[in-house]
Amino acid sequence: MKRILIMMTEAGGGHRISAEALREAFHERFGSEFQIEIVDMWARHTRVLLRRLPRSYRFWATEVPWVYKSLYRLFEKEEQLTWFWDGIYYWVKKPVSQAFRQYVPDAIISVHPLMQDVPLRVLSHMGWKVPFFTVVTDLASIHPTWLHRGVTLCFLPTEEARRQALASGLREEQLRCYGLPIRTAFARPVAPKEELRRELGLVEDLPAVLLMGGGEGMGPVSRLARAIASRLAEGEAGRPAGQMVVICGRNQKLQKDLLARTWPIPTRILGFVQNMPEWMSACDCIVTKAGPGTIAEALACGLPILLSGFIPGQEEGNVSYVLKHGVGVYKAPAEIAETVFRWFGPERAEREQMAEQARRLSRPQAASQIVEEIARVMATCEVSRPAQIRALLEKGGRHGSTKVAGTTLGE
Ligand code: UDP
Image (cartoon, rainbow, N blue to C red; front, top):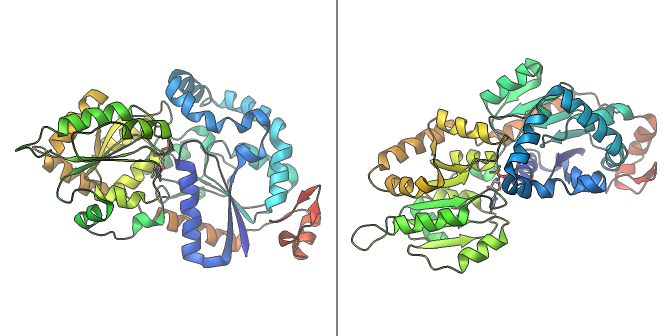
């Protein structure tokens, strides 16, 4: 059995979901041939102050977006990045190398922009040669920290991202473009919409709008929900023009606040859901911030996208991507409710056209294609580690409790 370490961190929902999508695809395609370990490297294997950084993501991105954007732009410049990584490297090289000794991976996959430079330097310092794959989980605006010339392969979600990687100096043969990895359930056929609505407890024959703000329930979700509900309540002959599903993700405060209200149209308020393919497929359009994971999943479900906002810097390119490919619109919060109302009434044809275009653009097989490529490369790629580690592995140290430099090998 070969071991793969997937490095991610809990900032938003997207990185974890992509990591899980890859693990799921490995299991579906290769059974128990690979043992996949998903690890939050920042939280578990860096130093105290850095550990908290990913979890503060929602605060920075929503409360002080100008600071977030300034930092994002500052570190786009190579000279700033160099001193930043030099500093981080000296700070965390010990815990990161201990982590590698603990997991002893046969391959490493990074699904986070801040996990290329330092891990690659640490591997080189340790004298380990292990295939290293970056799976980019942003859609169209790719921060330079994603793009490292030392990787074995870099998987990109879109042609726009591939062009950026080439411009950054990665070689054509290092790049693969299969789409953004989403959960394999998005590639399976689903029941007809009416049936799904019945199963999920929605009104069968009323158009449905899905409202969400990423895994953390970010943005003006509450304000949008109230505006959409009051506009859709103005239907005809006492019947509303539509129903609404609000997914609050991990934002419990938002969920509690919305559950305490009364709604003028049929409305479902949910926390973090595990069956996103079903909720998306049961709806007719989605209102969301420009999160890459949510956009890729919405495309797979043929959902036209109404973008209500974006995280400065990192999600800006996703807005242009959606507009350029004709799969949605970007509106100020004040105009969103009116657009949903029109899409459910006089402008239904526009919505249906976007739904078709979304299906054409989607790449629901991305996770399966990525893992097949990784397995192919692993079958031929050389893995070398210092003699001491090799000897321990040969003795079955991985699954035992053999100690190397004070670190337990294996589980
Ligand atoms: N998500 C989910 N259940 C929820 C809310 C969100 O599975 O209740 C998933 C969503 O399907 C998507 C991810 O969380 O895969 C959000 O990723 P995105 O890139 O859109 O935004 P982020 O949360 O990373 O800012």
